[in-house]
Image 1 (cartoon, rainbow, N blue to C red):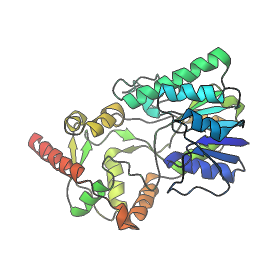
Image 2: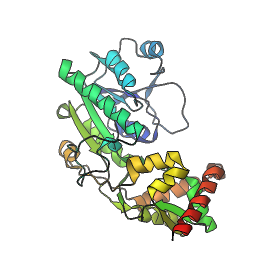
Image 3: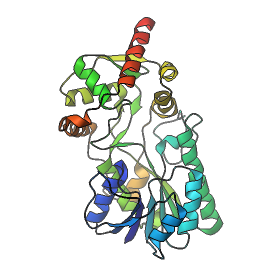
Image 4: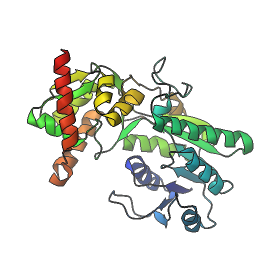
Length: 327
């Protein structure tokens, strides 16, 4: 297959690139320039900016592709340009949406692809929903061959699962408390990007994926307390956990609060039966206990990666005091 990735060097798309090349796919990247993230040899880079129509058209020329996958479309206007640019020049257009678009909070678990899309809190998720709706309308209007893939919380060795990143581990190693939302018992799904990539590449060029929607997640469910404890273990320390309602966290840190109230506050577990039917034999194999070790190995290998956000550290100190006053 001849496949184009718009992007290709992010947390998710870098793993998808490696797996695609290993599968013998002729892979192209449309991207602006060099990247610090490793990507496999053999990829042909088309130097262009998808946000600049003239630049994107010049980079693509008259080329056609069996599959085009856009990893960096976030707004309906991004999809509108994709439709204009790729109508008639691809057999499948894959949009990377988000599992945060599902009903929040969900009325039933596990989440399936038939769970309604409705996130009244997080604008990011509402924009992803609007993108999906634009693609579905194009499919109904003129059979534009879309496939929607919804990742949940997908990570690699560079990405901590908790807000604040390395600062949280720094606090643990100093013996300082860390704040976990709610009572720490809500269930969450963390997916290693290599696991995601193997299922994703299995959908490329798949006729039964056209006009349909899939999420790809791990089948491992962890509480947020467990996530922090596993991260602490990988860091060779312990976690002193303090609990605080998400609504209170949101009053002190809007960005963190939006990601909690719009996504992480509520338990989210997924039924992956649908993607498994189209990609036989696929399953997520990498537990977060191993993923946490990969993360800490990466950060401990270079002190320059161990960046402490002093503003966030101070915010967490304030939140710890708030929690103690509420005891």
